[in-house]
Every structure is written in structure tokens, then in C-alpha cells.
Image (cartoon, rainbow, N blue to C red; front, side, top):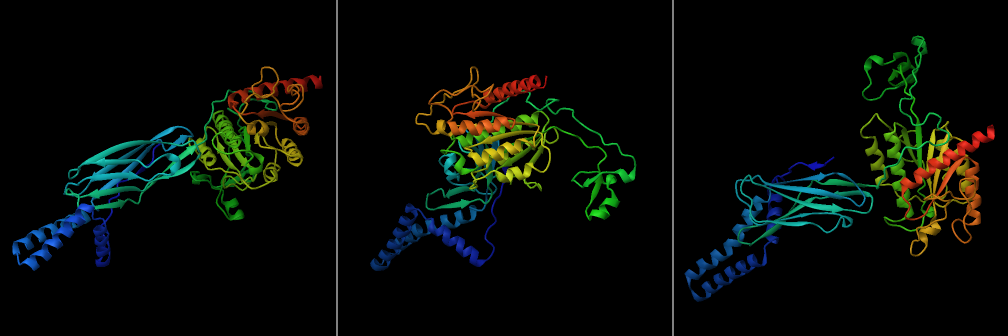
Length: 481
């Protein structure tokens, strides 16, 4: 996807005051050469008066008139140049490059002089690119390209484009700034995840899980609010009159498997900052899981500890897999600008979840104390399955970033705490006694819990989550037998 700003040649100032102000701005752009010519002309005129030499006066008038004429011509041509910008692509993962294509067009009947092109960029995208164009003929076009790159997520404005104009004699220079700008969105890095089966998902992924409502007659119609694109022939006027808003017949309701991705954004729950911090890993992990679930046909809901993403009544951002080509873009754009919160609890997210039975819950937690671990344990009771990734802040903060973490054999990320699938951490390493108790509390509530040491790939942890969920399901079936 590419963003483009159309050519936007500015109009000349409309009125005497605006014209005078523009001319004063043009005169202030006189170069050292132009000022020297003007001073030499005035000196020659003074010498002509003192010495009585009329020929010297003519020379002085020529010297003084040349920079003034160049300034007047440049003052007119500065409004005859159009510029445009095109991003390719307009949305890039962190650490990837995007190309910016600049196009300059001379829409006047006179050729331009020397032009210096400069695009304004935020400092995180690198130094401001500058290009020098020698001469652009009437109706001519010039195109230049540069690259930008950022390791930090965010939305960054590019522009406005600045153009420094110069006359052929180098007497005057002035800067023209266009008004249009574009936005480069740097989204979190994502990883491709393998399809796994998680405990509590009896039918696996949500492809083809649909339910049709049987309608016995007009009185049994289940109405819903009108959405853009609905057929007006399905408007249910009785319900519209009852609720005071346009309602349509919900003759067929698809039942899709749901997945809620919970991202803990509490500032105190993470250590460090920057692109290699545990919070950035959690954001990238949430983006990877959300995109993976969308590809598998899930309806994905994105929550934070404040439950404030999106515009829905429950404070959640919803995207339907397989229905909207922009669903992934909506999720990525949202996660591109997400930041730390100043909250000290995840209770708001629990309030959103307690409204009804949920499907799969995938949570990315920072540091949890006893109160927050108890709250997370209650969250699990509202879901069919739950996977929690808990960042090992002690390992992330350790000097040298030792990426090795205790885990059961064959597990890249290991289960956090004791249990049949988690093993026991070695003495002096991994989680402390209190952490083990908190994580054991999560496991007893039904969570599949994995620690996240630095340097661990999300794809490896996701496969491990599938393995542990299978073991828990097998253990549960064995207990029932």
C-alpha cells in the first residue's frame, strides 16, 4: 500500500499586502553575491555623483538592478512549482526500509534555476534528505528517491517538502514549503506461527463454524443495528420504531471461533526501554498471535490492561478474520502506536471479559504481583482456553542479557513454575519462590504459562504452548478416566 500527496502548486498571494510581504521575504533571501552587487551599484552611484561621471552611474544602476530583477523573477517562479510524494509501502515492520519517491514538476512557462530539494523527517527516520536539481525546463519533471528506516514503532509524518529556489546568477535564494505531508506507519515486527491445537478447543480453528438461526415468522426475527452496506430490504420497521434506530433482520448469524489477545501495558510491569525491551517483545508477540488467528478465520479482539482499544461498547478492538482485507491493517495500526499506561492493575480488562463466555484468551503479561496474579486466574474462568506469556524481567534486566532460561528438556521457553509439563527450575536460576507460587496459581486456574527470556522466538514459544496444552488435555482425560 502506498500513500501519495498530489501535486500542490501554491497560488500567488492575493492582495497588495500579501504581495508586499512576499516581496519582502524574497528580498530577505538575497545571497552574499546579490548583496555585493547591490552594494557595488550603490557605491558606483555615489562615486558618479561625487566625481561627476555619468557613465559610472549607468554601471552602478546595472549592478544594483541585476539582483533586484533576479529577486522579482524568482518571486514569481516560486509559485510555479508542484511537488508530490509517494511511499512504497506506507506501512512497514520495525527495522524494515520504505522508499520515498519525490516528484517535482515545473508548471510555469519559464525554466527554473538551481533547485535544492529537502524533505522534513522525524529524527528517528534518519537525516533529512537533500537533492540538488540543476535546471527544470518548462513542463519538465524530475524524480528522486530515498529510503527511511526506523527500529521504533509509531506513526511518523513525512514532510512538508521544502524547495530552495535560486536564480541563474545566484543573486537570490528562497525556501518554498509545500503544505501536503504523508504518514509512514511503522508496525511491530511479526513472526509466522505454526497452527497448533490448544486445550479447550474441541473443534480446532474456526474455519467453517457457522450457525443459522431458524426463524418461525415475523415475530421471531432477531434484529440488530443497521451496518453500512446492509440491504435496505432487510430493515425491520417494527424494531426500528421500538428502539428508535434503524434495525435489520438478522436472518443468518455466523458463529466464529473467538480469540481475545490481552496486552499488559503497565509501565511498572516491564523493565528497560527501546526496541529490544520486553515490552516491545510483548507488542510484537501480540501482533503475531492476532495476525495468525485472523488468518485462521478467528474473530480477534484486542484488549489492554485498560480495555480501551477501539470504539466498541466494551472498549475492545474487534476484527473478523476472512471478512475484511483491512482487519490485519487495523490491528497493526493500533499496535503501532500503543504505549505504556500508568495503571497498576489489569482490572479493567477483567471487567471487559466478565461480560460473557469467551473463546481463546492469549495474554502477554509483564511482572505480576499476588493481586494481579489472582485477577488473571479469575480471567481464565471466563474462557475456553488460556495461554499466558510472562516476561522474565529478571533475565531481561541482567547485564549481558543471558538469553538462556531454565526450561524442561526440549522446550525453548519452558513453563514458568512447577508442574507436570514445567519441570523444576534449577537452584539460583529462573523464577524465585514467590514467582513460582504465583505462576502455580495461574496453572491451577487452567492457564498454559510460559516464561519469556530475552532472545526467545515467538514461534518457538507458540509451538511449546501447543505441546503443553496437549499434555494438559491428556492429563485431564486421564483424570476423568
